[in-house]
Image 1 (cartoon, each protein chain N blue to C red):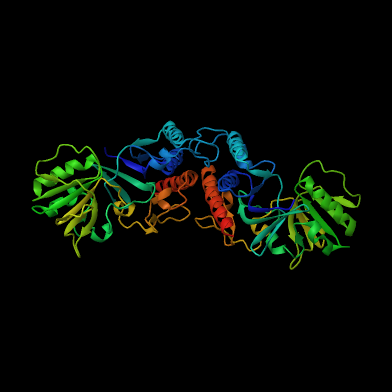
Image 2: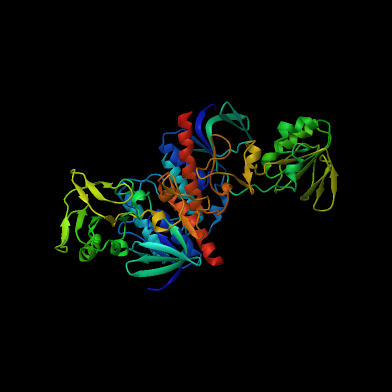
Length: 286
Length: 286
């Protein structure tokens, strides 16, 4: 797939879909990169009373309405998560799996802020902590590593590391782990904290054990937006935007819960609209 | 009517009603001061495609849905326009007709910005130009005045001035003028501009005539928000707000078209929600 979009929208919740329909109305080429369940918090809501015009509606039903509206307007939605994003000559390159797509603008609508898996991840990032084993793994060839996996999608990365590392520990945070390379040692515990002063020296587990390693990889968790898009300004754990939903990066907009409270549907839909319209305008000028 | 409200909301369009339902959910005492037709631009819209969840809907139908939602939640709406608003000890006093109500907070949701009737109204305000004949009229006792009326609601003020002034001219900007005091001279034309260097000295009409007077009153037109609420900060013709929908005045919020483009339903509903929730929080703290 090699395409240049006007807008690539990260997230298929109320903010992302609102941005999408508004940009499609402006005749823009739009792609929504979503998740299997769009907006888990809304999906689970028993009743929403404060989205004007649709009183007393179940979260799941409201989300279905949103999705149908977007699909009826021809919005393209894929269930794929961006691995990394880089900018070159004002065009954004979005990498996922072994594919890459390009876009003139980005709308970040990834929902409530990222929660890290371990304390002080930021401090250890690049000092033995990583989020992509196939990217940074080769640095630790012949050494000992621990991989923490949030879902079975992490398993191919674990097998890859088993081929090139000395000892490979795997700490799955989910049930039903698949068949892994026989060299992988599975740890049945939860992670507590990283050990190490300047660099990662090991991982402490909730059961008290300390596993010495040169690297810790956290796989398949949420990716913090500022890690996904280097240089993105964060304020109080949220993406900093102005009233036009512009971030500090040209052509990058953000909308919805990721920009701060209140975490509410109407606020997200409204911000999505402003982000979508402004991104469409930006794409037209380019 | 003597009541203290938590929120008084000026305007019954998408922003005002969204603010209202969100504050009512927070158990706040809310009054919406609306107009006969809420949001005339939406009311006239042939089709709205970009309010997420309600595709291809007629503006009038969408507005009916909004109104029904608000009414189903017990929102109190009156069809009254505030004449003046003043603040004392952090409480806002809203005057209309011969009534006054008080509120801990205000949400301004009055729609697209005010268009003045005459050029340079701001310059002449207080120098012979006024908006309330029953308020400022007595200053011009025994003198010559012109009143410009946007609707028949202005007529009692014209009759009042006929009792106390020397010559009273009336320039109605509507059809079917009612029965007026016989001393009133009706002008069948349109206003062009105010004459006068430091003070009002007369009014120039579109037909070329120049009428010498000491005062010009513009009655029943829209009231600019910063004229209604003294000290309210305006930027580029819109009420200046931050991302919390706070204006420069404590306890005063604004939402919807009056805060700037895009003039769109979802943006208004989202801003109304944020304004309503923040005003509710403010009222609770007081």
